[in-house]
Image (cartoon, rainbow, N blue to C red; front, top):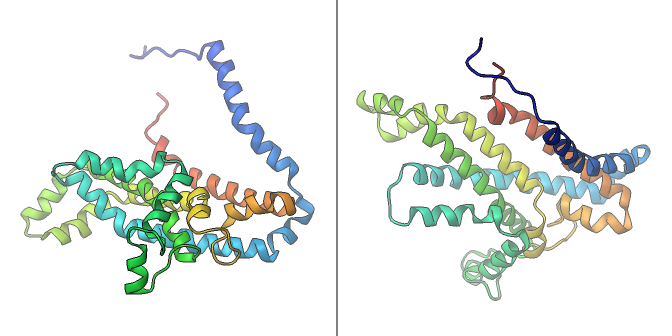
Length: 268
């Protein structure tokens, strides 16, 4: 006998779960069913679609790079630092995850716009930077909503790792940078990869903050989600095919992260 009794799923739970699965699956089926497969190549190679895909890739990769550059030190500070207000700092960092994206765009507008931003005018006068209605603004908006995903994932990895390896390296004379580079980073690599993938996927699908802060200008700020929104009325086929590209990318990210999320589950 096993120490744990196996029990089946109650019928009511199974029925409700089936309804929930249908709730998620039906919109996807509808999207696939309405896709103009015969014109797929023409739709995806149209100037609007190509500009949107190119810009989405550029901006999302820049947003991921910035998230790694600033998010990893931030996660390390939150995981290892002991300072007053740490909980408040963490709340501020993860706020974009629950903040309505349009509100995030408005907040960015009043922080970085040239005319009435808190620091936007100064950045323009001193460094010549203008974020509104520019590619840099699209990158900034995507970084704002994507970085929290990397921070919380890496922080969780730092908290769960065995610190005895770091202590052993330090006792052998390694300095902090060497310990971090040779011991800490390899140990949290799965969390780092997962956080980067989530940040990239979130940046790729960003809509509200981007359109509010950077606008919807083809070839400059019109990423794929913005192009879908604009093309739904004029070129529905192209909008659907771009939606399917985003859907495919999302599925790939979920498949790549399945072991990270569900790898601990085992049949017994």
